[in-house]
Length: 262
Image (cartoon, rainbow, N blue to C red; front, side, top):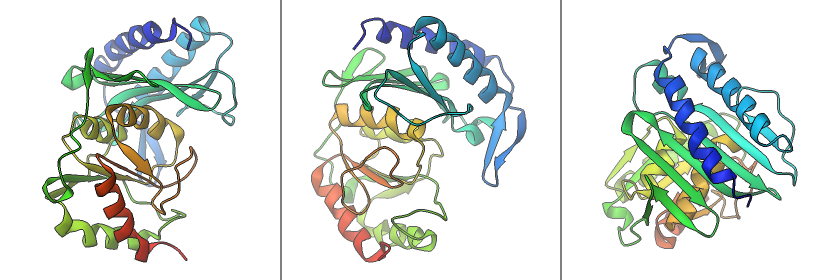
């Protein structure tokens, strides 16, 4: 990996954080029936596009608020300028900025910043996961019975499991976990798992900017992951289960099996 990438991620995040904290949460419009677009999304998206183009003119960029092509083997920055926009628009602190760096279609580095918690997470392929510069490892010894299960939003067009069965799956898992949580931001879900604040995450987000930064962080912290149907996860797949250990992962996949689309 280019040695300039890591300092660029930290420097650009610090600048983006200042921009974000100086912006209002005013919504520009509804992006969809269940999502908002704010001035902060647009301002941060523009900031990262220009910063990356200036520092790495050879790189491709896939950013949430831009028109994007498909992922190629080229050096690519994946940008989620404001993850958890609805939380941000309501003054909920669980939102953040996240970036992933791809080479040969593989995530090699990522940064997640949670500005209101003064937390910055960084992961590098094969070199570990870090919180504010300190290496972190999740606790594999917390059984699901004592664990917290976090959930993403549910989707009508999920390919692996029908919308109504997503609720039934959660209902079937209620007694298998201590608690369930829906934080509303994948950056927070992945960070919480990497910190052992939760022990599993069922995620139906399908955009690469929602998944790549946090998935690398979780895996480098020691997590395991598969698609809900038990297959290896590939970017572009619609369901993913990430857990602190193989036993918890396999337990969720076993419980999910009766609900999967035939």
